[in-house]
Image (cartoon, rainbow, N blue to C red; front, side, top):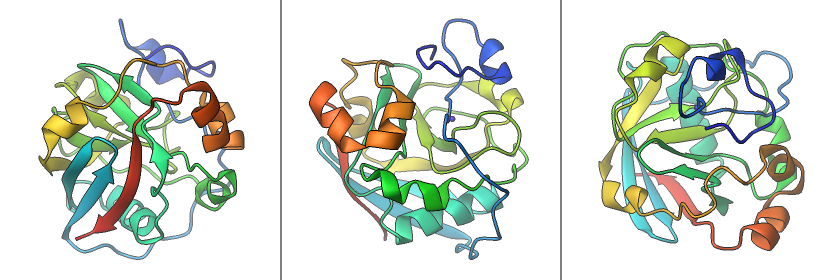
Length: 205
């Protein structure tokens, strides 16, 4: 959805050298149904490293696809940071630079069944365990099939610009604290981790 974050879940304990992508959002009640996304859609990311495009297939994970489409349509990812970059494993994002924008999306999303493996280039929601997806996602930088059995359901995959994703700045590793990002946003990241790459815009094509 990696061992640096303080609130490790049961699923994280199942990993050996890297903890599972962890969403430490303090979520509230179960989410209401999102608007249904198209069966297939593409999202173009403009980043500080260049552009990349993901294709989302609703058949892979319908609830996740619907939530992601809503987030993009509401410009949630604009001016957010890639705050966790572990080469060969994952790059994680999805905490707003404006903390007030996180709360409306903190409602937990019911799980989708696992229909695709966590292959290199797939995009996936981070979790704290069953039925805890909110607004954090990661892109697999390697083939991470071990995440399949831990409830991580890919919603799509990178179809253009994977070299851009691979080049995102990894010098801070897992040091940025998700709780501080959640409450302080970009003011914390820009002061403490100024070289993090960022999403300028994310738009449905």
